[in-house]
Image (cartoon, rainbow, N blue to C red):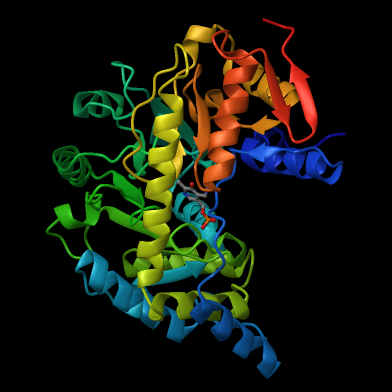
Amino acid sequence: MSLSQLARSIVESPTLRLNEEARLLRERGEPVIHLGIGEPKNKAPISAILASATKLVSGDVKYAPTDGLPSLKKAILRYTEDFYDRIVAPENVIVSEGAKQSLFNILFSLCNPQDEVIVLAPYWVSYPEIVKMVQAVPVIVTPEDGSFVPRFEEIERAASSSTKALILNSPNNPSGAVFPEELVAKIVGFCEKKGIWLITDDIYHKLVFDGKVAPPAWRYTEKDVESTKVLVVNGVSKLYGMTGFRIGWVCANRELVRIMTNVQAQTTSCVPTPSQAAAEGALTGLQSYVESLRLTIQNNRDVLMQEMRSFQGVTLRKPEGTFYALPDFRAYRMSSVELSNLLLRKAMVVTVPGREFGMEGHLRLSFAGSVKDITEGIARMKWAIDPESPNEIWIGERKLVRDWL
Ligand code: PMP
């Protein structure tokens, strides 16, 4: 079939594929533990549900303004003022179907073919693919010291006269790393000086542990929203566990928002209004909800660290935020894809291969699920590959015997 070369060059989303595989296994009655999942288990805030239900019950579900319902934009402006200490106008905000569409709109609106976009490894799987979709070129920066945060000089070295943008995601998916304030400030200064757009993906910005904060890049520019190179992406997916509602947004200068609005108008027209109402409900409802989610996830992180401690040969940098950890399994001398497949087939534990995030030899483990999933998942992983662990394990009524080590 003669399909578009560009479309064919876009790889499948590994995380969505794994979700589907896990779902099919579960449907067959297999006791799958999903440590690949990128969403908290909680129910959406009641304020979100009620706002969305009210919209639906009204029966008045029609097209909305392309850039978002004015009342949701108002709630986003308030949120922006509270968290970022920035006052922006409704014309500086565009609401999209999840932060993913926000990122697509930004890159599509900024990039010409062959422009370069700096992506810092480990990176969220979709960044390089979206960059490729808009015919730009991802330039990957991998920390030379094996850590998950690059040195400023490494970023500086990756920039060329073709660099159009840099994507910064802190707290970081997949490593859970939070970029230090000094580095964030330097990156902002560098981008403003060089005229490089700094796309800051703040989708996990409040899911930070141990009393720390993730310094948002926007704080380190003195320029106003009309003249800064810092663009802010945020949304309700992770913060409120509202992944299915598909609401994200961008704060940017008016001209860019206007162009992105044209792009969105010609692709998806507008964002479904029951979802927009839900996001407004979440943003204007009780914010203690976010804190209780954060505490649950922090506790899960502590359980994961405890369980991983006795895993032979595996090293793990403590996640400071998000709900992901990226342990290093290189001692097991398998590719991350082989390892992830083995864990799924033998132990029925879903993990995501580090290769997908630009970190071969690692696996991404999500601790967004229950404590039971984390402890049992890691116990099964140890059984499958750690020769020091017992040879037999019970999964429900089923006794599994390890005969491949
Ligand atoms: N950015 C990052 C770093 C993410 O991890 C995700 C979701 N996994 C997104 C953006 C997309 O979020 P949304 O559900 O709002 O599209």
